[in-house]
Image 1 (cartoon, rainbow, N blue to C red):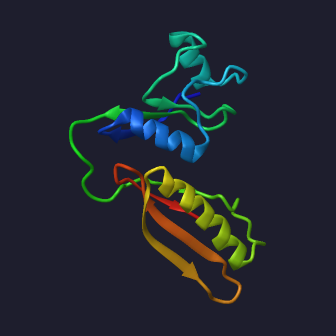
Image 2 (spheres, rainbow, N blue to C red):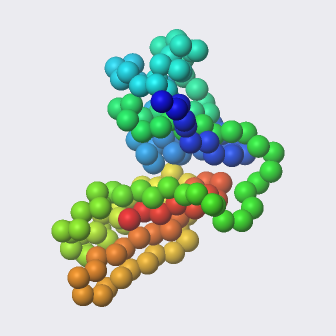
Image 3 (cartoon, rainbow, N blue to C red):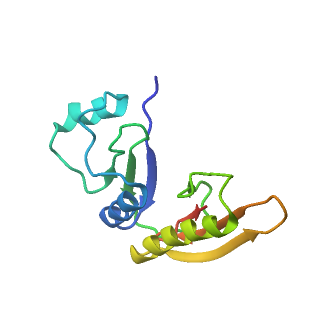
Length: 146
């Protein structure tokens, strides 16, 4: 099995870790009750009670850890990789009104944390329930909420 984590370049790793921990429901320490390859990796190196200010972990131990790596340069250009957040659970049975309400509630929470909105896209074709918002985290990285 290959150990892997997501790594983001950042000018302010602790600030980005705080933002994304709240956005994703992650925590600053590896979970103690999950036996995962990456959980074992970090516990072996840190002990059970040491926290990071530049890494975040899924408290359920199911999703990969995320590391925010300090870099001197600012972001330039569009991301080649981005996250999609689905507060709707990708539920196709939702009405368009319900989908918009759920997405906009999450967008409001994220903007309160320092994110910004780039654009909203809505597909109103019969049988289509497409609605997503392209956003930027506090350092300008793009992601979508749908």
